[in-house]
Length: 240
View (tube, rainbow, N blue to C red):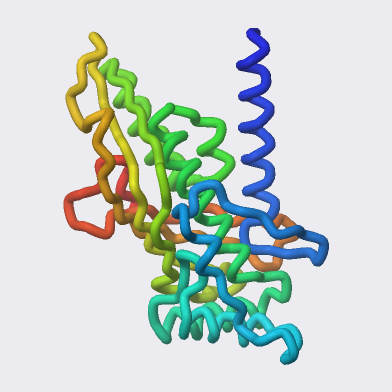
């Protein structure tokens, strides 16, 4: 195997492991990180929920502050979602809303691009079994038609929690993603049959992440994907 492919495989495997390990949880030793798909000016818009002399906020305080004033390019859309997040934080002391929303953006971009590439292994690590089945079926159909697809996520402009709830021991968080992307579909001869390689378009999708908060596995998996715009979900399967 060529050396560049070996390096690529190692990097991809490491990123999948990081997403599965830290999406939505903190263990007290993490360093600040910058999500690679945040919009260019995102870091400049980060604000603190409390002034330095007020001391650390509880996660409940942090969620309330995030609902009142978005941080970077993410926030909480409504009071019902805010209350649901607080319920999750009370039930799961390791839950961190900022960490979750930053990690969810990386997961979103990786899943969309992996679906276009037909990367089943990566998808299986990040999707619930039902959602993976839908994605895998769509990939198989595309391969049967001998079509290829390329999708590049250039920037995630917004990631807002629209709903959050606890159902027994399962926590569900729904996020609306708004992103800039380029998508191209080609036929067997390499001719473009959908999209444009030089055109950046805005996509808006609503995804639901879920996790068993009693499990030692910190992974959040995608339980549902759908477009925010009716009849406009060509990039990934609609599993709603």
